[in-house]
Length: 167
Length: 182
Image (cartoon, rainbow over all chains, first blue to last red):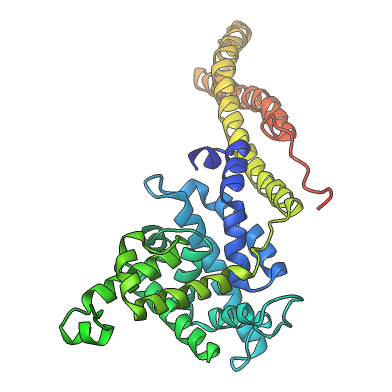
């Protein structure tokens, strides 16, 4: 990151190669649709570049970058809710199931999207972003113990919903 | 020999292994690992925990059923170009600031001695021509005015050339193209 702060394009390329796919995957899950995820992906990297001179080298890059991405997705989610009206669900949750999408998977995806943000974000960061609990704590600015309990709580909610669906 | 049921175990105050195993099952799901091997004996023995493992396994399958969204290489390339453009602007700004400092330093180092020597020669000529005809105070004021304006003019002239070059060259770097496919 120090190299990126100095304007080193090679260092930036290396970071993008290493973390690009996981960041994009996470944003797609957080945003719920590909086009928004692409926009957020671009904005995330521009923010990373702009904030590089202020990056604390004692911190780890991955949680810092994922924090930027999560905050952007959260802002976008908020804007979308305002646009649609508080009572309505954002577009992703209304989209038609993809061809060949198993009903079970669709149901779980919808349940996942319906989880409150404070449970959904740690779960997505852990499961799809591959961050460990310490990194999630850094990314979300919450204690590690809270991350663990939220993760277990989120899985419990999904599992309960899954059991309901299975009946 | 009859195996203890989960309910019986709980009644005996031995629910802790089940809780531990279920926590391990959730941890394994979150880490995308297979079930906890060290709990295999308990899982073989406890139907409730086995069922929990089966449900979590099915949940994992459902989560993984949706293929991960692919990162389009064209998007990656486009974002990289835009980010590189931002980096270029930062480097250019740093480069220009550096050039400006260099130019000012060069102007100071070159302009001051050259102008002072030149002014001393002019003053010698002035004194030879005007000494006795003008009051001494006026002569010294003229000398000071001449020296000051000469320093300013030569300094500005010397500083403007490298500054202009730095400004036109963007600190000596070519800006990367942002357009193109993707």
